[in-house]
Length: 377
Image 1: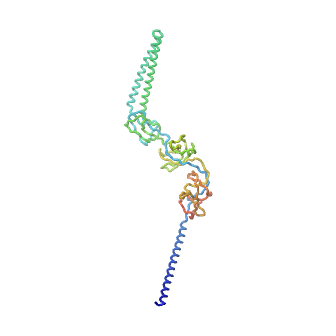
Image 2: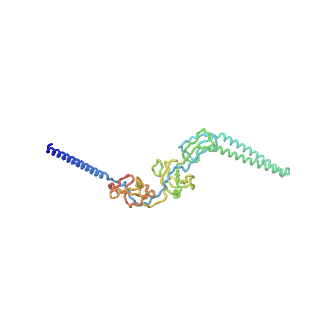
């Protein structure tokens, strides 16, 4: 091979190597430029705009401390109509949901047998009264004879004893007639209170025994919550304390007040029952489940809305807004309470008037830039 040909080949190889190197450097520079462009765009997109409702100021407030309570609603006045005598049930027409008035006839028990018993007892009383009349006339006659000396005083005393026995028998017969009359009156079942029928537990034509449950009536004009308290919590609850409740299916809060506290603990659970009267029972029903907060005192402290304290990390924290950036700061939540209709939680270690993101904003990465819209604090 000629010498000049070797030099040409070597020059071509070197030229190709230089060209490849230039292409690699050019591609790397273009990729770096594209990455820088993406980072700049990402930084521009990371700016979060905040409205006045997205932030809350840390402030020292006097909040109502509360105790979480729950339980079923019960009517203060309710009654179960039971059969006082045995017999066939007749005339029961009311059903669940029907309104009844106090004293209204709900049903009757077949009175045929009881009418006969009343008639029998009255006739026995009349017979006993006739015996009293006979014994009385005999006593008066004997007394006249004693005064005239025709009979002894012993005979008069015997006549007096017969009169006393006849009078006693007459009184017993009258009492028997009264008992029979009462049994006859008990065949008529009347509503003891005004209210609504909640259960119908028997059917017309059915033979019922004594104390058989016929109808249950509830008065929904006055309802109360039966709350179960632990032994420790019950020590802080007193008659007259107020509570704010929500009932399932009803978003409007309802005010209630402690009216009674059971003096005995429930066997087994050792819980104590407290009864709270509702200020309004419009649209509510017995048996609905209610829950809420019972005010047990006041506390002056730094506080934030409970939703502003985040718990998606091992330790609770808040998202502070400082120098137009978001910073995460750990906090130790304290007591909870009510303030201006929202649930607050006590926190310490934050500066007064510091801005914290509301819980509805969601998690925001620390260092994220924020932008306040006009009117923001």
